[in-house]
Image (cartoon, rainbow, N blue to C red; front, top):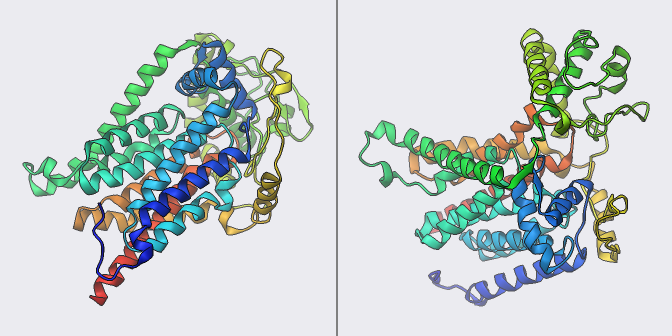
Length: 467
């Protein structure tokens, strides 16, 4: 129980009750806002696997496995929406509770994060990105509390959130790497020489992430009966096309191993580093709207995939400048250093379900509140709050200060937040196949957590100076 400060007022005395009410109201509002939940084609693909109880590894199968049981309770996305919002609002409650500098700030952070323009527009979509965000947010919030009072319940809850967050997105491991620092303390390595203690804690954090990742991979292999989906071939073919574009390489007669007609005309018409829809999702030429053959890597043999891997690796080695130019140009669009329209910063509705005749058809009615949020979010799309580079700068500041704070004071909070957001964002430098805004939602969320924690720390410091 939090100790009352001398002279604390009526608000401080009832802080816990107000915090609980705020989070319950927020959860209920968003759950009712977009019933039964929004679905994109990716969501529908995972829902289909959940209903069939047969899983592939194109999307991490654990999310569909969870959906399988929730679908029995409520057919459609409602169960997953409940889970997604429950994870997020529980995390927000505990993070608000962790802020000790100002009761007012701990209240204000709840609506501020919930209605932040670059986050609120996608809260009700059943995406693996948002499931990951909510689960890792819970892992961070409970991890902060565990570091503070060492309750085993906080540790177990944080580890559960970490496992599920890593399980529902292939590259979530990048965000999880520094989180083990919240579980480890200097006394765990007190027998080591002093110069080895901090590096040992960092290594321990990496080992925790690797262990969680290994458990996730083992579980996913047990579940995935279809496949392999060969998902890594998507970004590799994308890189091959880019190298051919920049260095004028003729790949039409090379052994691509996929049967894709990569003629010079096709390459020049198809390559655009700023494209929002993945080039290889349906293998369409964006500039002409003309589709060739569907790109279905899951149908390729091991020999065909091996041929593609050999070609990709050879071209990257021979044309590193073209490869890095492509990846950097693509990454710049991903972090918002452009003036083009953003891809899916706000999403309400069900898209693509009418094409799935064997699936239950769910009606979705856009509420007036949802329409108001769409209009409100759209007014901010050209502002700084939708520029991911701005949040990366915040995370860079967290990392620099957090490194000093960790080395000098054994406090890893800022280092964990900064490194998690930066590693996750830069993982897309190598694997992204479109400039999809949802790739950046974790970066935005954790940067806001870092900013809130910095403000709370500043308030605490100011109060100690007055005393």
